[in-house]
Structure formats: C-alpha cells, structure tokens
Amino acid sequence: MGIGEGRILLKKDQIFMVGKTKVIITQDTIIDKEEMGYFILNFWEQCDVADINVFPVVYVSCANEQEVYELFKSNIIYGGAAEICLI
Amino acid sequence: MFNLNFKKNYKVVHVNNELGNYLIGGAGTYMNEIYKYRPDDMGFIYMNLCNPFEDYEVKGFLEQKDILVMHKDECSKLNSLACEILVVQFYEFAFMLTEELVKGKKIAYVVHSVPTPEPPPAHDPFGGNDDIRDKFYKLCEMSNIVICVSNAEKEKLAKIYPQFESKVKVVHNGITYDKNIVLSDNYKNSRKIFGYIGRADYRKGILECIREFKNVDGELRIACPKNDESYVKMIIDYIEAADMQDRVKLYGWCVGKRKEQFLKSLDALIIPSLYEPFGYVALEGIQYGLPVISSKNGGLDEIFEGYKYKYNPYKKSELKDMIEQFQNDSDAEIHKQQQILLKNIERFSAEEMCRKYNKIWDELLNN
Image (cartoon, rainbow over the protein chains, first blue to last red):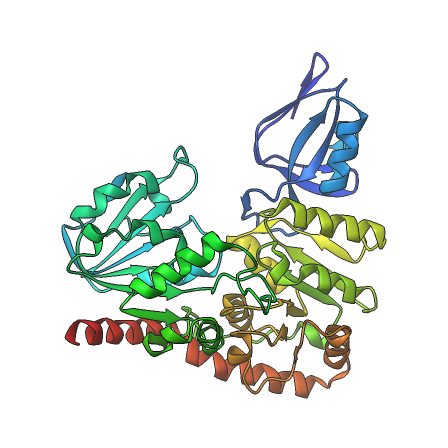
C-alpha cells in the first residue's frame, strides 16, 4: 500500500484488514481519502485464495448518500478507506 | 474465431457455451469430463452466446487441442464442419441447426435442463417463455437422439412432450474422483457449520434455506457468484432484516483451492435446490467425504438413493428437522450414511459416463 498526497494506492492481490475483516483486493485501486467509498465483497470474479478467512473485495466510490444507500442494500460491505489497517 | 488444433474431420463434435475455465454450472463440469476422456475422433466447439468482445486466454481451454472457439455471429463458418454426429448441449444453439449444417449428420441433444421455471406452471410448463419453448422443441424434434442427465429429467421432458419419449435415453453425469476418498470427521467435534456452494439462482433454494436457519442452531456459509443481482439482493436484504449477519456468511465465488478449503471447513454440505436436473454439487460434496443434507427433488434423489439426510424443499421446516436429525444422530449413524454415499458415487464416475456415451454414438451410427 502506498500513501501520499491524500491518496491510497492498493496493489492487486494485496491483503490487509478493513475493520475486523481480512480482505484481498482483486484489482489495482487508487483511493482518494476525501471521497466516500467502501470495500465490498467481489463475487463477480472467481477467487482461488485458499484461506477462506480472507475475503475478495473491490473498492466502490460513491458520489452521494443515495449511492451509498444503494451500495449497502445490494452488497456485503466491509468498511471504508478509514478502516484500512496493514498487516 | 480461433482454432486450437481442431482437425478437419471428426466422428463426434460437441457444441457448448461452457468449456475449460469458462464455466457457468454443471454443464461445464460435464463438458470438461467428456473432454478429459475423449477419443481421438472427438472435437469441441466452444461458442460464446453473449459478448462478442469477451477476451479469452488460450490456456483457459484445457489441453488446447480439438477445440474451436467462436462467437455465435460466426456460425455460418460451421457449414463446412465435417463430422458424423453433432452433439448440441444447450437449447440456445437451436438457431445454428440450418439445413446446410445438419445435412448428412446425426444430431444429438444433451438435455442438461428442461428449461422451465420451478415449479413448472401446470397450464404452461415454460411459464410464458415461448421463445425458450420453441428453441427447446425445435432441438428435440430435429435430434435423432435426446439424452437426459437423470431419470427425473427424462420424466419431466416426457410429461411435457410425450411424442419425444421414444428417442430419449438417460446417461447420468459423471465425475473424476479419487477412489480413496477420505471421509470428513468434522462432525465428531462440531455439527454447527453448514455450507452451500453453487450459483445464485432462485431454483437453488438459497433463500428458503436461510429462512430455515432462523430456527437452526448453526452457521450457514454461502459460496456463490453474483450471477443474479436481484436474487443476491433479496438474500442480503433478508439476512439484514432477520439480523442473521453473524450466522449467515457469504464467501464469494470460490474456485480451486478456495473451493476445496471452503468444503473442508464444513461439518455438512447443504443442497437446498427446489429442483436439480442432475446435481453435480452432490458429487463434489461426496468427493470431499462430507455428510450432505440434500433436497430430494430431481436427479438428487437418484444420487442419494438409500441415503437418510434428504428432504422436500417445498415443505416448511423439513430442512430444519433434517439438520436436527443430523445433529442428534450418533457418530456411527453418520458414518454409516457416509458409507452409503461412497457406494453411490461409484455409479457416477466420469469413465462410466463416457463409456455409455461412446456406446450411444456407435449405436447411432450403426442404426
């Protein structure tokens, strides 16, 4: 994970904690710390990570509260960028 | 289109939209098993029915031999296809059976699923999906032989179209499995971790299963892709509304090692399908030596012949009762049931399936 200039860079297959959940990110991701966004379970793509206690995620940024609401209604949410913890 | 050492002439050519790593469900597992034990004179066409711009990796196609990869819009190129038997695996391929293509060939249709809603409406088994009905009918009518993957599927087809019954044969699907299956004994320490693996589809009965778990002392783990957004949304909504987040957990689309570890983490596998034409997932559970608690609808009842832990998914509380039965049974009883599964899986080996198919192809040509 790289951090600088208000942005977070996550490399594909990087494993880290979001809140209490250990996750693996399935694509290179740049997060603007100012934006609203959440890590959600990625079950659009096949995952072969052997450790089933690691959950595949993608990051989705939301433009407004309505988008946050829609995201929460249809997905498994693990937390936002503020809850990232390196391991 | 690209050609992976696809020869100029074959005895049998299979057409499917699932092959190698490009799988959707049981029909793909079946196709890969047929490929694994193929004779030299058998070819495979993988036809993409959806996105013409989908990217494919050559290494995703098994041994990269005897395979033609194409999009449905290129179908006219098949008019020069040389084979004696064309085996169609999906009703959506009905469009490709032009006069020119079928000329001089025998046609076989493998029915992986009679495409009805579940349960099929009595007055219109196809539930108003006239386009699907017409394609399915056309394929059944044009085929010299129709092969169903279970007796249940044959009965279903014959009930709708009795005129085709005489050309229907049953060949159960098969799987390659280790003959020395190690039986799981997780249940000796815990009988609380249950799991579902498969597609997210209302016919799989996932929502009904979660509802039953409201009254079950246990945790349900679900491994599925998000192939049906609205159904997954219903599942997530229900889990939240019922405040079951701690007892129902989703693990995503598990394949390879993850699938293996997912299954090994369970005390028992649950197959809550409202109906299964065959039920490959049952064989996968048995492969891992797991006790299975299964619906008995469709082909599942044939796989679980003589087995105790099966139930009617349309009857409220039957799953809950069956889980409690499993939880209360002695270790010896569960072991006895596992032995029944070990015996049953012998009838569903991939080698046996391929032997039966090859016999059918020979008979088809000789008659």
